[in-house]
Image 1 (cartoon, one colour):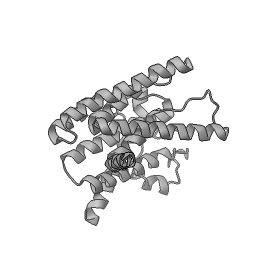
Image 2: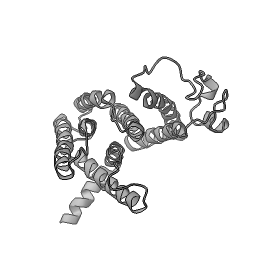
Image 3: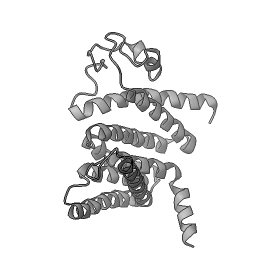
Length: 256
């Protein structure tokens, strides 16, 4: 990839990330993603175009609204920068093609799910339910994964979370995972196939367990506290997408 193409992919990712911020802010409230135009979260004054440049405007304004001086969350530039990085990595790894377009839509969905789940502890069906058929359609067009693998991935993903949720509820006498987690892993399976959805799930469980133990050991959380599982599933999916084949090959070599 040429330098110009890399810069362009980052810039497109930053702009898309700005729209993802709108989705993250409005989807949990059931608000329109189109109207009204972007407003200050403190004073509700419409944001001028030159104050809405991804990342740059936040830095130039010192993280404050030009009108009221209210603080703007650092999550806004973080989402934009993360999306820009994901766009660049996807272009570097897969090049420009039809599959890349589908994968970018998939990654955008993961970003939205991650930050909504962190803030509201919900996984919006408006993202995951359309994402499942989109992943299956992508497999029919790109054949990567094959339609059979994509369908199996969606079923395996939903089944994995459902079984874990049932057994965990019996063991701990409380709900550990909900329908949002089931739909999310089904979407991951539809895009990545059944092998990668297994890897995504186990990476998510491992990362979630390690972080939970660390937070409990440091007194940040108690044993009764819960942390959202959606971000870990999203992290596992990203790792599986970019490095899953290598991880699976490494694992099989260990078993030989």
